[in-house]
Image (cartoon, rainbow, N blue to C red; front, side, top):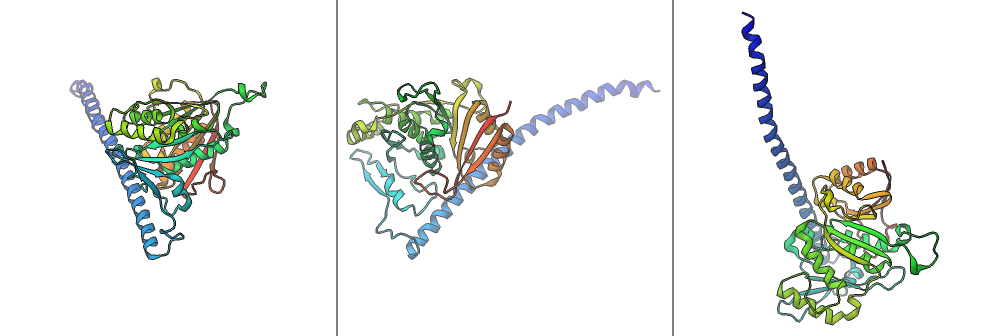
Length: 359
C-alpha cells in the first residue's frame, strides 16, 4: 500500500517544477513591464514639473513680480534665410536674464549658438548645436549639460593628464574623456572645443547617433557639404551657418568623436578605460540607475575621474545611483552652487564627482 504514494512523489515534484518554470516567465515579463511603467511615470512627472515651473514664471512676468522687465531682457534669436525658416537662439541673451530654468524653455529653437568656448588657452571656437525635439528629451539641450561643460572647462587642471617629466605644453599627454547619454553632444563638444589635448568620445543610443554626427560635422568639419544629415533643409541650414560664422565655427583645441555606447554592452566600450567619464542629467532618463553606475565603473580605470550633473527632480533614482556609486568608488562628493563654475546659475543643478575605483 505504501508503494503507490512513494512512486507518485517524483511525478508530483516534476509537475511542481514545471509549474514554477511557467510562473517564472510571465513574472519576469510583468516585472519588466512594471519597471517600464515606472520609467514612463517618472518622465511624465518630470514633464509636469517643468510645465508647472514654466507657468509660474510666466505668471510672475505678467503680474510684474519678475526680477527683470521682459521689455528689457528677452531671449534673442534670428530666423535663418532658408526655406524652412529655422530659428537660431543666441544663448548669451538668455544668460543675461535667466528668469526661468525649466528644461523645455528653448525646445522650439532649431539651433542654439553658445558662442566661443573659452578654456585655459582662450582659443576654443564657436559652438552651435542643432536640436531635434521629435527625438524626445535626448534631442534637446539641457541646462545640466551646459553647466557641467563650463565647470569641467574651468577646472581643467584637476582632470587633465600631465606628464611630470615634461614641462612643455607642446608635448602634453592626451586626456581621453567619454560622455554617456550625450544626446545632442552639447557638453562633450564644448569640452573638446575648449580644452587642448583632449580627446572626447560623445556617446548615446543608436537612435541619437545621426544627431550627434550632424552636430559634430557642423562644428568640427570644415566642408561645404551638409554633413551627416540627409535632410535637404538641414543641409541648407548648415550652409548658411557656415557662411555666417566662418572659420570660427571649426576652430577647436581638442578632438571629438560621436559613437554608439549602450550600457552593459561591453563591445561598445572600445577605448576604455577613459581618464574622465561624465554625463549630464543621465539619471533623469532611466529606470535602472544601478546599471548606469556600473557602466560608469566599467569605463573607468584606477585613476579615472567621474563627473555627473543633474537637476534634482525625483529623489529616488538619484539616491539609488549615488548609493551604488559610493559602493563602487572610494570617494563621492557633491558640488553645488556657488562652487559650480558656470554662468548658468540654475539653482536645481548639482554635480557629483567620484574617484578611487574599488577593485
